[in-house]
Image 1 (spheres, rainbow, N blue to C red):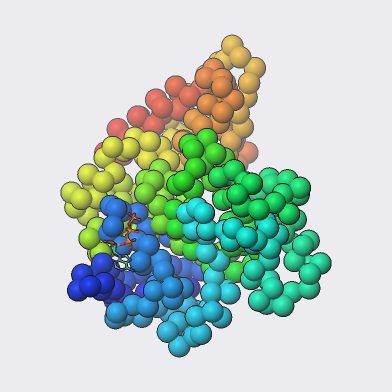
Image 2 (image 1 turned 30 degrees about the vertical axis):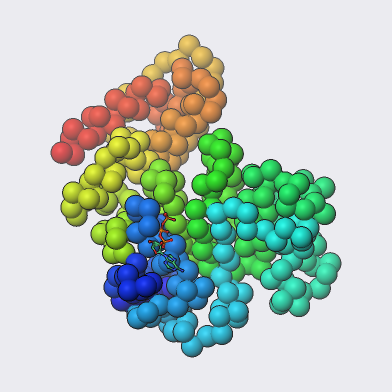
Amino acid sequence: MIKAQNLTKTFNNHRVVNDISFEIAEGRTMVFLGTSGCGKTTTLRMLNRLINPTSGSVYINGKNICNQVPEQLRRSIGYVLQHNSLFPHYSVLENIAVVPQLLKWDKRLIRNRAIELMEKLHLSKKLLNAYPRQLSGGEAQRVNIARALVAKPPILLMDEPFSALDTITRLAIRQEFTALDELKDKTIVMVTHDVQEAFEMADIVCLMDKGRIIQQGKPADLLFHPTNDFVRDFLSDSFLQLALTVTHLVAVWPYLTAAVSTHSVQINLSVNATIAKALTSVKDKNNWDAVISITNGTEQKTTSWAGLLQAYAHYKKESL
Ligand SMILES: Nc1ncnc2c1ncn2[C@@H]1O[C@H](COP(=O)(O)OP(=O)(O)OP(=O)(O)O)[C@@H](O)[C@H]1O
């Protein structure tokens, strides 16, 4: 568990992080979201002592990190940066091997683990001896992720990990990343500008402005119970998309009406999936007439994307 208490960081008499506190339970994902320059990265870097707070403390599993040797602390915390953070004169294998070498792993073990991660991240084994300049942005970012995960750290810090990529690559890597079995039980702290990304990935969103936390809570809490106009305005542009991202099919189950499709494409989902996931699946299959088959225990209902939206409208009307 990570606990930050009254963290403040001052640069040149300017409080860029101003007395913030938060807790992240083990195995959970917290995403810091907010305006540019509001102190997200500074906050993240205080968790692995790349920046030391001016005042306040960070505890990891009850231990104050300021009593730990920074280099040792960082060996148990994976860190994924935005882009161009690979060592340019190291090959892909050498980049991934940095922490395992510090931990004195056997060479064969390092290579096998690197190959295992590269396969999981859909990177060709042929790239093991390539240099960062020979990689595409997407490949480089996959190597970055492999490097952060290689020594199986229980905590992963990610600073805008997907932001330098084009939309398609960004979505592909994000989907691959969230599907990784390696992430099971990891505590993840991520910084992003992308509201949609934050809502898809976060258990808890922490919305910051001018060095302060304005609201922290479950994505649905921020969306439907904003504490003030700043939160409401911040999320207003993507409100419907975010609402579909935080609403699970189980919520609209009672309102679903059966649909008959002229097409044979069928999408199977459980009620635990979100409406956004159902709509994306239809879009990915490029078949807006697809039958969406939803399973709820032993029961099953079929609907269409239009039926889903209708059920959502009905559900919102009833819950108002
Ligand atoms: N080492 C430093 N020295 C002086 N000022 C700094 C330093 N690091 C960050 N700052 C300033 O602190 C403020 C917060 O920066 P930070 O990078 O934490 O914001 P951010 O929310 O991550 O921004 P962005 O989303 O634009 O990356 C900014 O005004 C920045 O210029």
